Length: 359
Image 1 (cartoon, rainbow, N blue to C red):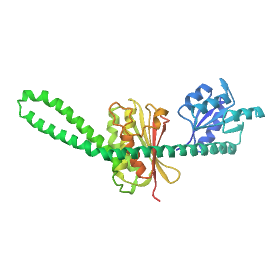
Image 2 (cartoon, one colour; image 1 turned 120 degrees about the horizontal axis):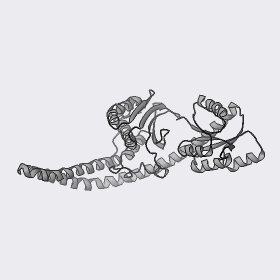
Image 3 (cartoon, helix red, strand yellow; image 1 turned 30 degrees about the vertical axis):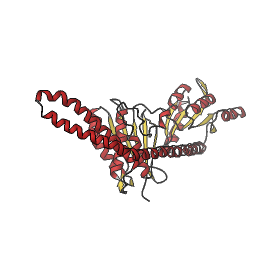
Image 4 (cartoon, rainbow, N blue to C red; image 1 turned 120 degrees about the vertical axis):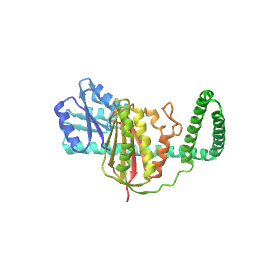
């Protein structure tokens, strides 16, 4: 994914100059001319901030500290036209990654940005590894528990379903005028039993994951089929469902990956209000991985919930089972990949699924 750079500068010509250079080298750039604007954008959209030392409504070093507190995983590069020992010391105290003097050479600018970005990505990789290890431990524990309890749970469910079928046949022998009042609550109970069976089936995927039949497949074609299936639902909800892809191949199980992208896209549609947008992208990534990102313009996931969304049972939906994301996580992990969640440039959440390409 392209790095997101926030350019905090009140000089329009300098913004155009620096922004043009950075965009030319593939970076995503947004600009802010005041501290207030920078803090608002930096809440959810920033990997690196280039911050001018003097701003109309405040000081760049103070802003750098606030941005760092707000987005501790991002890095700050301070810009100044008046270099001095004092300003350099202020930059260090503010936690800035680097300190550049305006006007700076293109190679110095890119070097500072690339070095800061490598550090951001290294730290992110460490966090994701720790998060995946923790989630894997929790899923393994749930799988062990489910394997032990599934037999005890399924037997009563089967018995209840059988007795309901017997009761339904008896009701159907009554006079038609009496059947409706009795069949309606019976139907509700049957629906609840089916829901419990679906939940149990979901948990069994942790206890006894089905074998993956890996074959070469076009990831963009798998995602394209999901789009075709969900496009009518998106239109009914007045949501724009967009798809932009590059042809990219992986070794995987088409049916299981279809389930993953169906779950994630449905979640994005559920989170997006009418008139909003859900966007799916397929792309190449570093380290021989292919990536599918699912962005939405709904409400972003709070930071305190990002570490919990792949836990079984955890859900923010009134009718959700809390199993869709854990199952998706388990399938992607079995494929040797991983799922990351972050704030989306559309305003909501972005789920990025990375899968290894064929050797």
